[in-house]
Length: 262
Length: 185
Image 1: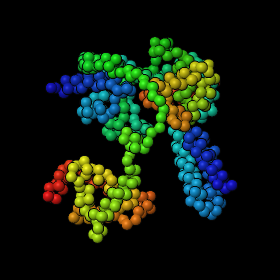
Image 2 (image 1 turned 180 degrees about the vertical axis):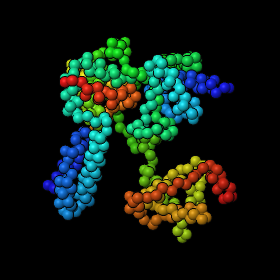
Image 3 (image 1 turned 45 degrees about the horizontal axis):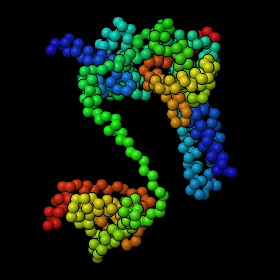
Image 4 (image 1 turned 45 degrees about the vertical axis):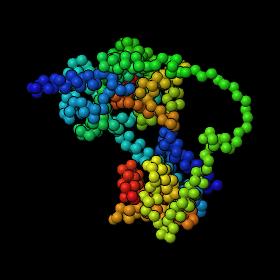
């Protein structure tokens, strides 16, 4: 019941922001008293979030009230009812005549230049005929039939292994490479025989870290980055607020790594 | 090059930039003028404005957000948009030549002044109801689309209408409200 009341408060405050309702139609003191009254009853995170949302909307109402007062103090402020009344009483001709006195239309000119004409001619001459651009393909009727997983893999509609399977295989490879040492230099794990392979391995490694299969250990003084695999997946890390670590995997760095390895 | 010749060349260039539409919407940003005319472009625009006054035209500056209370800073000018507009309004008999019917202008005046009175934002259905008191229903929808398309009014995702770039450039809002309030009813 009390959460329904808070929902109604939120709706009222939202209507001020979204529908331009007079912000002074919201009794801020009364709403604060209501929120205080129910606050000790809230237990679940959802209820507390609702309370916080109500406070946030209430703050925006107060800001709107401030803006309203500021606007009233400007020379542009007019009582909307008075203005509406004036508009209703004036006929179309009078309204238009008044508007013309305050209306200063923009003077603008659209033009072609020799340069734009030349560019347009060049484009036109190079443009392939519409028949060539919109090739007509005859439709082919085929009978519906059944297919197999292997066929879908062959057509590259399905991957041979799911991404998660691939990630777990990669994780096992990391664990094997690390062995007793507990950690391995980033480039020693990511580096491959070709640059393409290195990029693929760096891509997979980023998912290992993001999904809680491993973590990165940074040694700023020596400018070294290690990968530390976990023995078990720590899924809580995937949901926790994390920090992004940008690591450049450029072709130059790969070449340097390869030369050093040899 | 003499100082006079320098300014004459810059003023010609400024006139070309402001008169000829170069983007989808008319007008030129301050930073564009700075790039093309140099950092003393406010001075060049002032001289151009003096020339245009003889033709009852003016260089209009529309600032991002509210206009500064005092003298604008160079940063505010760089972010502002500049247009050439009519200086002193039109006699109403000229409206037909501009492709506007008297109904269209009356509707636009109504919508703009109502939105001003509502602190710059009003629900579209309220504005349409007000227009229906003067115009046939079928014209209201059509006119409203025209005002939005031309940039006089904008509509947000909650169906609220606000004054868009063209109104800010072309309409002296205070003058309009004063004129309306000054009428005898």
